[in-house]
Image (tube, rainbow, N blue to C red; front, side, top):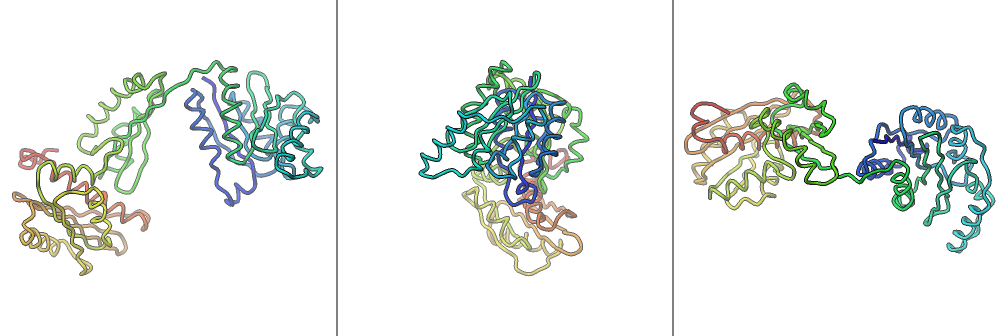
Length: 394
């Protein structure tokens, strides 16, 4: 299976003046053709540094794709850098110059003489037609590897990649189209490091792969399989997904597009039960999130007295549950001091449960953390069976 490295070129990328979207598109496109990406490098407009990066990449990868630096100005260095890395001279191709002239003619413009620089490519390069821009592209084969130089303009890059480069790579490496199928399990109220302790051995698998993505109060576990068809990819993932579900138990609340609020709403609707949520310190964000899932019997109340402690929250929950005649009530109060403290109170006809959690992460992430922890507390209490509540099992 061939390997890929991407080198994006441009001082404006290093300075953060523009965002690199090219490497994301290239990586996603080529992975679907069975090419593994090893590294993405960004380099400013410097011939020596670009040339060195290409030489280093050639020691590791079969395909090196550069984007950017093919314009007509002095600070467009890619042509010379690739030539230096391949130990070749730049040569002028009259046919490329004619293409450039025709492109300018179609635009109703006159090229300047510096545009002629774009007709120079490494001596043994394969010229690649660019049907939507003035920058010719090229491929330089070095041993069994190749360096592909594409424009930095995203629309041009995508078209040339799809129309010319992918067919070339399919022929050169005898690629078979592959399906990449990702299954994402969602875990809440269990940190990334704690999950890693439980499933670390699975994260060393090669196909399917298992990876973690942490969010405030939630961790996604992604299982990604490669196969020649979707059915085979699903079969590859199935035993790993089942193993994860077994190991992590009720810490997993859903899969793929499922959300905490969606699961709670669906259960409420299926059971024909009503919920009231009291919220303090979150500006209505928790209530809005539950509302977005459209439960049929839901009411939210923002408690405006701040801060509110656990005992006061318990009183508010009992009072509002009684007055509203709701089947269950969730109270969430967030107190921001040196750290963020959250009290949660759950009440239904049989029980009253509380939990207090603290958060030490970035302050701007605290609201999302509180929403996820609060909703997961509600899920665990509401969806647990009476037997589990009596015995304390999970």
